[in-house]
Length: 350
Image (cartoon, rainbow, N blue to C red; front, side, top):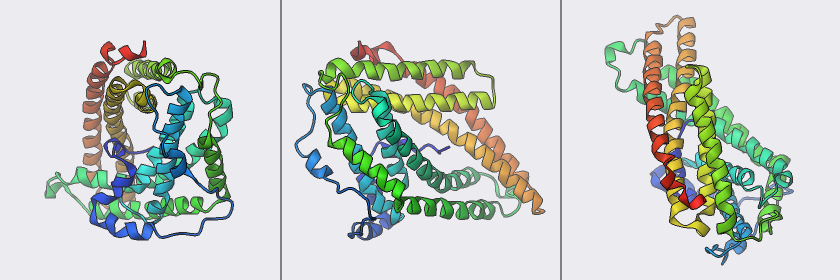
């Protein structure tokens, strides 16, 4: 599970760490040459990317390959920043792994899934480690923000200190797992496999066909899956079943967004606008998922406080606050989806 930070992911990953002084201080350290663990590939992404900006007349394989190369470069460039614990670097690297994996899943006619199943699984593994580290960063901040407007007389016991103390060791442990993974043979093998893929060409049956003829159908398939899951979420029983259904719908909206992003060099403005609509859906459902995770954390913190002999009243308030926000966000998600799914946003797919 991961807290939503979608707006950040829309910015170029290499800029994310420059927005705060602490990040700037870490940049010099992050860019110092580091010895590569044995078994890593020699990357030539800059050479591969030079002069390969796809055009509207490009083939489907060229357009998708250019997107894969961009995300691979982003992922690799962020590793030293994650090691240096720079602001937002974990999130940005995680988004790059998600974009890579979504692209492998969305364009089977350009990249056969049978050829990339293993790589997609390894990207899921890496994304899971980064997700755990990101949750441990964001969740305590989310809870502290929810506590700020609570009147002082209702903050009973060392609430803020308990929140911070609960998540500090979790964050340290999750970060240690990520750093250990970077030095592992498994990660080196992932990089080798990704390097082999982005060297190209892509082997799919329609990779040589014009992108404008091939890619819209792939984006439409991702959209139809999102529509199906949104309907399922609307009909799901209240409670955990609906929360889970909405979370699945968010994953589909994210895949549709990334597919449209990948296709946009060949399609242009219509694809970019559709991606923007899917981003809105993804964001509001992500905000809802934040409340799901925060409610569970508030419950766990309340139990811990009770067992320690503290008054758990404030954690109950926190839980109810998140429950109220969840109901509000579910209503907003329905409205956002109705607007995003209007036919005019999908004319270019026909």
